[in-house]
Image (tube, rainbow, N blue to C red):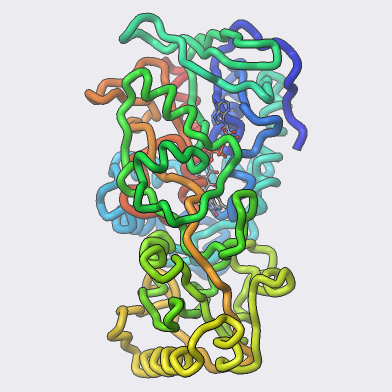
Length: 465
Ligand SMILES: Cc1cc2nc3c(=O)[nH]c(=O)nc-3n(C[C@H](O)[C@H](O)[C@H](O)COP(=O)(O)OP(=O)(O)OC[C@H]3O[C@@H](n4cnc5c(N)ncnc54)[C@H](O)[C@@H]3O)c2cc1C
């Protein structure tokens, strides 16, 4: 994706400054530009994309025409109830309501600009299939292209915002200082600054501070997800939300390095998860965040996802986290003709793995899992299946902090609030840098959804200020 330039000097002023070139940033930029505003978008890396382009590309929308076509009954009210429940009622009901109220409008807004979803599947935290998926690189490319076509959005690459400029200790935010190839430059924003810098999964200092329990989890995320927006706003007195709930995502292959993205969820298609002692340790239908925490308490922080041929065939080619065949071809899914041989290949105790699978199959047959209470494939949805059809498969997984799902306290207009609950005038935040929306856990598709929805909200609120 080649949007933006890195060598030109920054303009001295724009109607709106957007800091961060991921989905939230470009949705904010496009929304603002379509109302006639000039936008300067700063991106610290040499290309745009952030965590957005690494994502599974799933967006949580409820009550869409695509769901109806596929015979899926869903509604905004069910989405609201699911979101509150998944968040343990610790999420801000006002922010959840904004998402619910604007999600169908944003679905249509995306479609009108060329982002059309073709598949829907059930994923973590959803009580019906509502993960609308699309290649995230395509999504961002389309929105960024539309933004640039307006002629009112300028993107500057390798331009890292360093500090907010403020008129006095409690005054309005007037712009930013940014480091570019030319040095440190100042830009003024007539209507404010929207922070869309994403999370901080690449900042060890912040992770140690806020999530010491995740020390055993892998790290990934956009290279620029270093928490700059959080730090800039913190310096101005911003409050934070949901910092206590940072969790890893279970399902990352143990071989993944900081630049890799090997997430796979056969457990949500019917597989089970066992530890190095070949025993189950969790209800596999829970949010992958909760499974992640349980996994970090196991030997070597490992969970072995075990599944069979029938479950393998439920894979979704093209959907990164459900494309079992692609991971088999890449050598990350291990297969063997018998459970016994699979256990040997994994270094697990064969009789114990056989006993665990046999016991689980009995639970499925009886309709009751007294060990962990699993009652569905994913979040109570979908009938459980026995693991009995050769060949058998395994995906050796651990937990990965790939997004932080917490951050700046914002109100329903995406205005950043200070530690006393007062808005920091003309400072807005959207997407991965904002907190308060998810609460204790996370429903798949709501991080991308939140980026698009609140990016638009922030732009509108800023231009109205
Ligand atoms: C592997 C993976 C899979 C995921 N799957 C899903 C999924 O299927 N569904 C879902 O809803 N969510 C998913 N997520 C989470 C989701 O992708 C993110 O929450 C979302 O993309 C955040 O968008 P954003 O625009 O806020 O941030 P980002 O896309 O991270 O963009 C932020 C941008 O800001 C830039 N930046 C940072 N600091 C500065 C600075 N000082 N100056 C200028 N620029 C700066 C960064 O370089 C980056 O480009 C996934 C995340 C990962 C990593």
